[in-house]
Length: 300
Image (cartoon, rainbow, N blue to C red; front, side, top):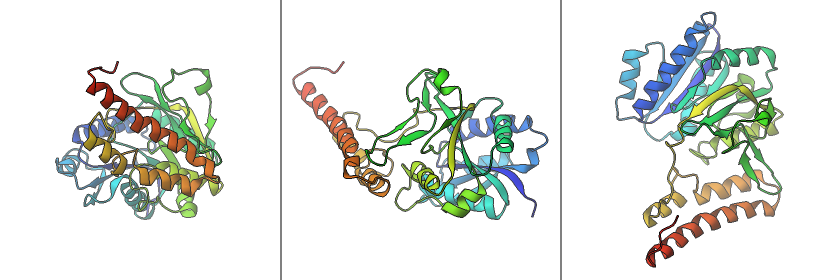
């Protein structure tokens, strides 16, 4: 079996228009790397799409590996399936988590290869992510305080500045633009798709990897743009959506999953305080909006 340098794992469910743009951008990246082109694989895990995703990929990108799911994998299960295939069938050295709504700068893969060659295998490599529509930073890795429960992404909502122009060591990474040597999966295992099938699967896994002794460093030259309009459920002033946002796997406000995350990673009861504040403002904002609407006052 011929070893490969890098496998790019892309879990998808419908959203063919995103996948088309994503694969087109990656094809342009690979064209700049003739030396490595045959050693870099793209693996799309199609979890039961009904919009012709798999057929379109096979017709237009014959080199892309397409794996099938039945609609029950969600994000974490899709990543796991793709990673296992890349490690076992492609004998890949490095794994890159990707999403189909991500667009990289032109020299992203060139910069990534340079970092892979420069840094040791125990470094998990993260990207600087910008919001596609306003050019603000979406995140450059994240912080999680196990005592206080404080969890945030570095740079969220900020203009790019000197602080984010140098490598930054962090606690966790999101599930896009994150690269691992195969030794991470050999030691830490796979994502917890049972408890965190969608949200928290990425932060849970990278926190676990850090606990296993791996370093997490975000690099400013690895710039990607994320279409954050393609997001999960929020209440939008609807009682039905409020209930769904608090209970659905598709929501970052899922109460059960948020409590489970804190329970798993925190070391103090006070770590639940930020979570309680978050729901106070979220549900309180919903109630306030309804009350104002009842008396005929529109929110600004």
